[in-house]
Image (cartoon, rainbow, N blue to C red; front, side, top):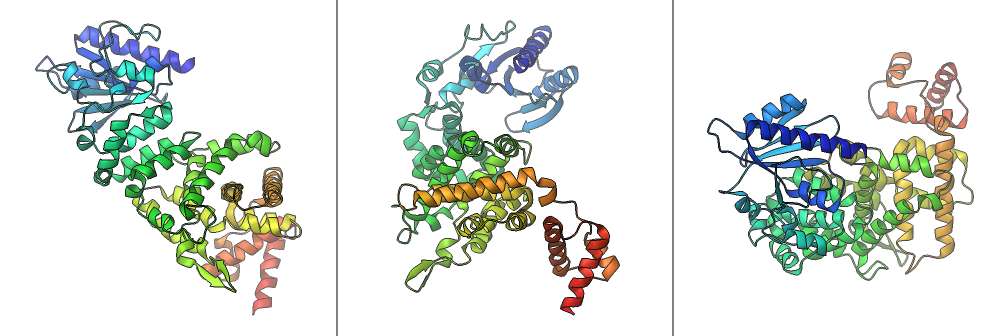
Amino acid sequence: MVKKKIIQKMIDQVYDFCHRKKIKSYFVGGFVRNLLLNKEIKDIDVVIAITNKNDTVAKIAREFAGKSKGSLVQLDEKNDVYRIVYRTGIYLDFARMRGKNIKEDLNIRDFTINALAKPITDSVHFFSISKDIIDCCGGKKDLKDKIIKMVNKEVFDEDPLRLLRAYRLSAVLDFKIENSTRKLIKQKSFLINKVAKERVRDELFKILQTDNSYQYILSLEKTGLLTEIFPEINIMKNAVDCYYHQQGLWEHSLETLNSLEEIFLKLPFLFPQSCNKLKKHLEEKVTDNIKRKEVFKLGAIFHDIGKPATLKMIDGKVRFLGHEVEGVKLTKKILRKLKLSNKMIKIIEKIILHHMRPGNLASAPRLTDRAIGRFFTDLKEEGVGALLVSLADHYSYRKIKIKKSEIKKQLTTTSKMLKSFYQRRKIILPKPFLNGDDLMRIFGFSPGPQIGLFLKLITEAQVSGEIKTKKRAVEYVRSLIEKTS
């Protein structure tokens, strides 16, 4: 309700401004679509027909930004698009009309459901939006039929990002992509390589934000789009013979993603004692628009990519020794090309590097507090992601190989470790008594890996209760030095 009031106020401000300035303008695109669907609105799209020689979109947008206390950004120099950003999280786009009239403008948009406009001749209200809609491409019918359909056959040549956007809209709206549109996407999939990686990344993460992104990632792979974005996927697709899934490692990776999303939806049932804190952790933003749970999903997709390069036969059995390390190397290259932030890359790196450890702990005779402490000392907060992806990894084999008892043991271990982490957080992740500067100042250490090793040992001793004061920490380091000298 609060968001609707904010949007309605913004709509009224746009109407008052355009009416007073006698600006011929239209609400268009995704804003009109989402109003008709009664979906959440974060942005308002306005097209302006410049009729006064003294006016420009830049001038109009700048004046409106000043009056409405927003920050102005030039979004698209070529098409004369300006964005006004507000502290509420809402943003408003002003764009110059393309063509001689609004119908020509709508006829060169991407999909029919976005080729909708409403003249700003009166103040629009949520309950009167369906009146006076300009629909020259059949968008209202496609909204009713839940169809994503291209406006014309040139849409993907004009902006190849639309190839991916079709699937993003399909995922977010739960609409089907019309057959001829899907076939053309398959034919034109190679064009996605012309798009800036940042734009591709943003669309991809919008798909991963949905609860069932698995089916859309699968569809992207079938059209060839996903392998154009991530050609390294072919490494997994070609590794078939040594895996239990019919389509080999790639099918296993997709099933891991599918299982992870299932786990996310069943948190209250699987982890009743840790559920609320887990949800908060998953919803935590890593960047302005990307949450931890979406980053974990990408980790699930690539968690085993290092297996083909490390495959060996040892005593007649297939082994993948060191596949985690190889997987990190490959995945870092992939994610850097996609322009992910260093923070996101480090999260995925830790998940891949340590995704086997929970399974090893589950197979141990007894799960000790010290083992749990050591795990979270190494991974910190990212231990949560590694635990969930590891569990999803095991779940992916449910129908073909793994015993129910093994799944139950993995789930029990995961549950115990999460419960211990959240209940004993301050003990498991204590504030260190000593840091690297202390080690160099007190003991004359030189900068290097030795400092990291000693800090890890100190932390483990704190977690186990062996060290409880700074003085004892100094004595502990001194005893370690004496043993190694």
